[in-house]
Amino acid sequence: QVQFVQSGAAVKKPGASVKVSCKASGYTFTSYAMHWVRQAPGQRLEWMGWINVGNGDTKYSQNLQGRVTITRDTSASTAYMELSSLRSEDTAVYYCASGHSAAAHFWGQGTLITVSS
Amino acid sequence: NFMLTQPHSVSESPGKTVTISCTGSSGNIASNYVQWYQQRPGSAPTTVIYEANQRPSGVPDRFSGSIDSSSNSASLTISGLKTEDEADYYCQSYDSSNWVFGGGTKLTVL
Image (cartoon, rainbow over all chains, first blue to last red; front, side, top):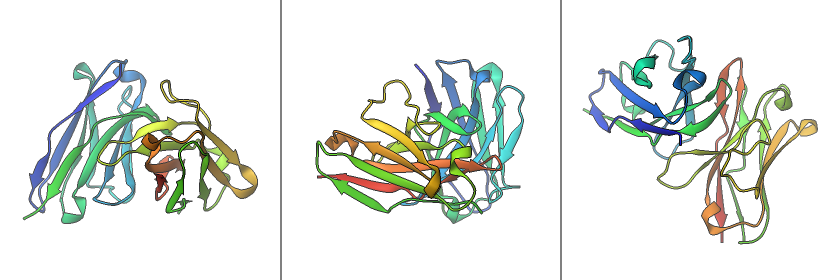
């Protein structure tokens, strides 16, 4: 069955960067897109961007343009999301989700990133 | 910017049917895929409907999705409500390849 293992929770200082990983199994990694979605405490889901795992093309939310980078390592069936210049508003649970460009079919368990001095 | 609007909360009794709406701010919601995600408290979202009316394997047929072009809205209908259906439900579509989420609807089954 489709499974994702995301990296563990982390606490970061304002201005730092964080890189979250998402290791996929149970399907052909390169056949589906990978999206990243975050959710601040008590807030709605927010889309961050996606990567065409097959060719590496990416598209990012305009709200995060310039601060977010999504990459993948096809040999390790793993996708990564890096967010830079962290601020307190970036405190959230970060999810990876696979599917096609317009929809998610399967979701990771989430990674809590706390930004605090 | 394109937005999706959902009711903040709905409630219904076990065994009944409930419908959650998702209204697009512009354009034609029927021309883009609409998805519905269920998020139980403290858990990751799961997909219950994709491409307006398709159910992933494992999702019971009590869950169904539809589109009403006249009101530019999508709907999620859950029949035979169970207490385990109590959750937040988010609709999602996209605009110029950017995903857009609705604000979420809290479903209470009481």
